[in-house]
Image (tube, one colour):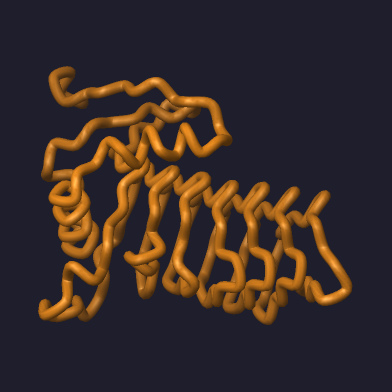
Length: 199
């Protein structure tokens, strides 16, 4: 059971608008973002007493909304042989462009409206990427039971493996799926003559 002194149920702001993003990103100092970077790369997130967000389904997620971790702060340190499993994190509205989700393993995380880097690879299970932007990026990862509803994947090269993922209303203009997709949903997606969906 969560210690009530650590429990911090934060009001979820309505989606959309730069003011919402600015509010979340303005919560973190540069030092806090450095600390978050270290926590994400060592897997020690839950040991640092961060706030908790309660999702609509009742799940508790560690609140990292709006944070801006930066892998550049790790320069000079050895890269881990295997990245830790990151689970039950809320990285909604986070700026992950400089962090680069490379060789990451994530489970039950929320990254709604996060800004991702141009390269995403690793393994993701039951993660919510709704509304993310990975414009003209390279996605070479395994996704299982993930959501990309309303995501901006314009011009992205998308490979590896997708199982039971939902791309409803995603912008796939110029996107090219080169990997396998099983039982995925592509309802009401925005496409053009350059879009290559999985067969």
